[in-house]
Length: 177
Picture (tube, rainbow, N blue to C red):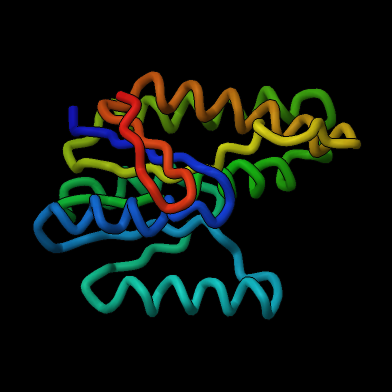
């Protein structure tokens, strides 16, 4: 089983920058699995800035939904794979499954279990970036509360199985595990 590194923190905390720094400690080739979807001009700009910051040494794979399959396809082809980010992947799944009502959370947790199984079988190290979303106020609507709860469950599960866990606060990384 390859090494899994989990990096979490709040929005704009510096977690992606830190994860990229960790990834560069591995030899090339480097792989970046992006879960963001370009749905508006603001997100287009964010994606452009991220790509520009990373530079040309990275291969980028865009996969908003089928994260486990993307990792399995990339396994063995790179020295490290960085997934940015788990939270957007969960959000994408939530919007994909929200029409099925009560089974929505169950389906997302099945996808999370698939991701954990895939990670356990990987030969390529994987760095996962995820937002810590549960430290603020309780959201005012059920969909947002469901997302917060799912993200918290996912972060616990992935951090629990990871070999290393870091939290980034105000640009300062702290190793937890």
